Length: 288
Image (cartoon, rainbow, N blue to C red; front, side, top):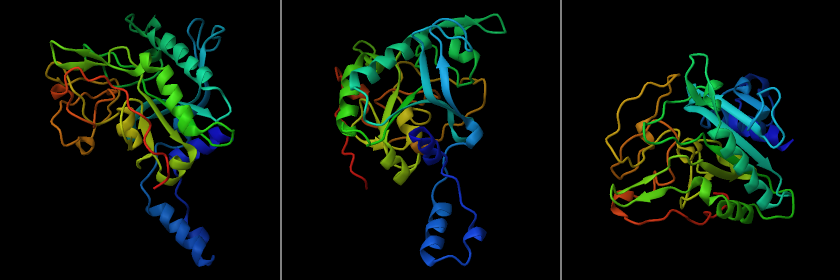
């Protein structure tokens, strides 16, 4: 049920105002507010559930020990080329949630030959995403959605999972070049179902591990925005055209990388913060 509710909250379907004509004023006002709210991400066809991510075996017959994403989102027209989602009702131990990212990492590193005969990460043989910058092989983002049903605190779950997975998402500081590298890292983003329902994907409901504040999903996941770069960014040709809007750029001057960006994007100019290690505590999760 929580998976379905997460999908609906991300899509934010618009009601037909003609169907509420003549209904109580409160119902009409609520429908109008939903119509006027920022659009969501994709349509129902953009979402697939219970998708196997084989560390060995095939897509249809994954080996034991493979990861399985609760949801996979493919919505390039909404600047979300690929997003994987894990949902938790605050009943599972944080250590078990964190262990899933070991499986994700193994899957992301797995390579297979594509139909063009070129070896590439297995996930790229199935899904289209913007091309990597030559020196940064950042994996697709993973969104954690916590529903406060169980006894565990969603905030505590986020904090603990962030601590246990730091080796998967934290960048490495290159002192000589003056930049952070996120090569081989997984962008991990977390939110609660309550915040997702309230703000939608376009609102400040999402905490990217390593950042200090909540952000809209596209920016938190790194699918648009700015990021430091060790060398001048060059134009790339993605397998499927995905625009990265400059509206997500922060006030600090940074170079644009049209892929999945590191945790530093949108916080500070890391070129001037030598030796900085990205950690960060979860932002306040209260609504509003």
